Image 1 (cartoon, rainbow, N blue to C red):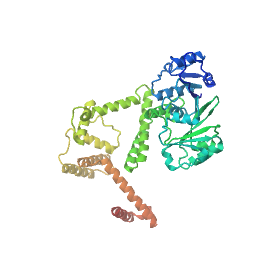
Image 2: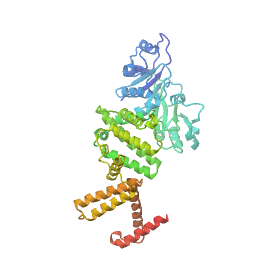
Image 3: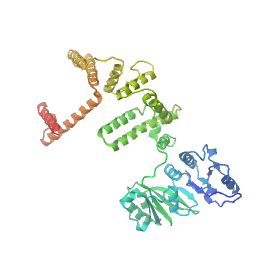
Image 4: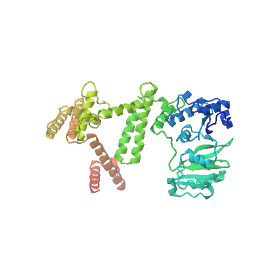
Length: 472
């Protein structure tokens, strides 16, 4: 694994013989924005072999994350120097992206001072909230967490440890910082560390530490997450991720969806954000697997759902009209039926949980008029199914069939009243669990052995639990 350096040499004059850092001449690969122009001619005159972004399948006007990806890829097989005929940080996000994606230090030439490099590398506005403090007088305050902080004069391990201890008073130990250190030949290195890492830092004679208000992350957002999954599935990636396929991930997709629903019901925003991330992971994993097989990629997934949403909202993106949620749903289902070939129920997944499957089937047939006229008619059907169940032999195949009929009819009883049977049953399960936990607590307080208590005693504890719940 090679190193990465960035060299900004200014705009060369015609015929000017460049005085270049040794790092340029020793690099395995020298990259320039363009193979033409003053910079390319000056490097050729200096006897430096180079490759342009164009030759790498890139362009100087490409998004910075693509250029970062190219440089990191080259560094996997040797030392790389990126030479620009301007100050090296003219591209916003270049240094922060290289630090985050490469996992190694980034060297920069030429440099006036580590503090100036930090200011320019991270595009810090000097008119913004900025504190520049010598490490010997460092006493950070809580309110400084919302400002940029540059610590100068970190010249030895003792002062680096002091910086770590002081920063630890208001920042978490894993809060990321950037250390600007020395490089032989007159430049400085930029290294992504944490507050805790500073304890073991061996700085140079003029190091500085930059503490950002927020964690320094990759600039690419969702595309960076997609790239991360691609790395996990790559030749040198995670053995578990590489071993997965669509079928092996089925259970995980279901589990993550259920956990997201549980987070919704708990009402905790933090938990919901975490669980939605886990669901997104499954989506991106499946898209990555499909892309490796040449079938589709995450862009296809996004394009298809975008097109589907537009198509199924003609009242927003077309000439149709829908003034109520019910009209929107009716339009949605009609469009969905037109999109699919086959019977009315063919598009309903058969591997849904049974209660949810029953709801979807009953709702679908109601859309085409297969419906009881009144709620009383549904009640009559419930009683009819119960009578048929009573006439069966307990535990028989026929009894199982009749129980299924009763449950299906009760689902329709809920639907007819606008009640979601799945949510109603989940609420009852939660209620039963609360009451049983109360029974266990009361039994422990009264030294009652639950298995030996008998149904009458347990029934009384159950009634007590119901009374407590009603008072609450």
